[in-house]
Image (cartoon, rainbow, N blue to C red):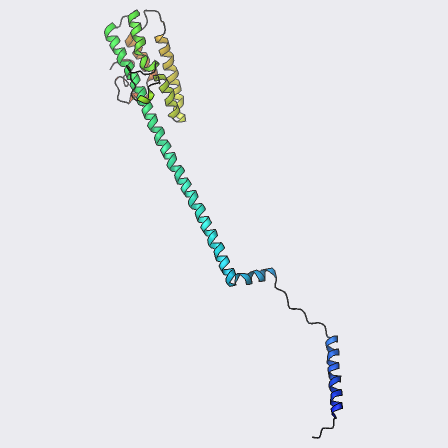
Length: 238
């Protein structure tokens, strides 16, 4: 088919079409801008990246290790405290037993001396010599030990028997302290009365031993195995 349009006409039509296209673009509303990524999307994209996965695994592992180490440290501290508590309790019980045995030894020594005095003077009323002997018989309870009158355990040499009773209170449990306080008060008062400058014609040695047993009887030293600690006031020298 013959081309009836001259080059000039073609160029004119082309220009008109381009002009119309530009007009349409100007009249059309602008295309919406691509939606920007929100923070959550950015974070998720970062976490899914190679570096994000490495960083996340590092943080998680470090956190797990820290929690594990803290729990291990707490467990070790708890075990150490439990072990120390057991050691302290063993030490307390050991000291308790040693003090109780020391008291039993002093108690038995005093009773043995009173028995010797009783055999020598019988049941007659005290005279000056008998009274002086009774005062000396209470030395294991009333005075600190000495080289001539040694203690059962060397570490208690500077303690009197009464002081050992006070020491036992420190190692005893709360429920026992009240009973020990009463025994200490009764025993110390009795010893002070007997060893003071009493009138002659006081109680004889057997009566004194009976009075001491009545005030000082206590299972912790009565069952120690030392002589006379298990006797009673009716037969103080059993």
